[in-house]
Image (cartoon, rainbow, N blue to C red; front, top):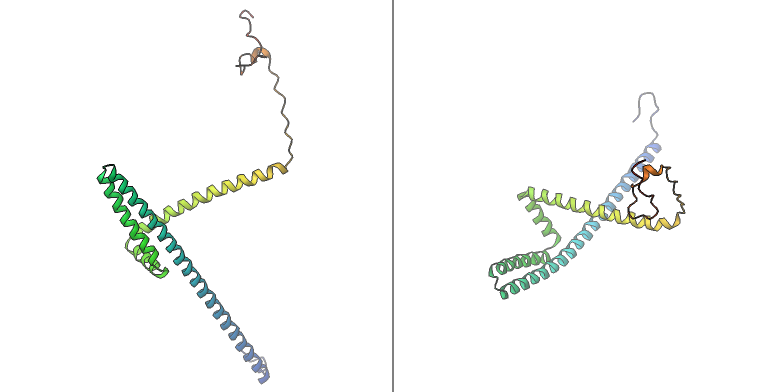
Length: 194
């Protein structure tokens, strides 16, 4: 980029400039490759975590299905057929969910979740609201307990002496009967003829 008033660049300067540009492009390419590698590693790690957690959740849900079946059997023994059928249906659906979670990988779960969100956006919105409220309640509860724990640990280190202010001077005839229930040092009732 030369203008008419500046002298033309020498061939040596042009070579240095093109070398610097090539080096900058090479460094930028390396940085982009490293970023892509880091992103791929993060995605792989996230997929592994989702796979592991969904399998664990599936196992827990399947265990819950077994508990529901036991409840159904107990209800049948008590002669309550309708609640027993409901418990069995709940157990069957819970077992299906557990099997789905155990057998699905992260990509399948994400695809199914996206499809569900497209079919029922209001359900996803409602779920997000419920999750947000639950998270807010959790954070509020945990922050209160952290604050209380911090106050308890800091309290012994502070040496603050509190003094009791003197009681206001109130004539005995005004103070009679006010806050004297159960006290033996309270003045007697004033005489009627005063």
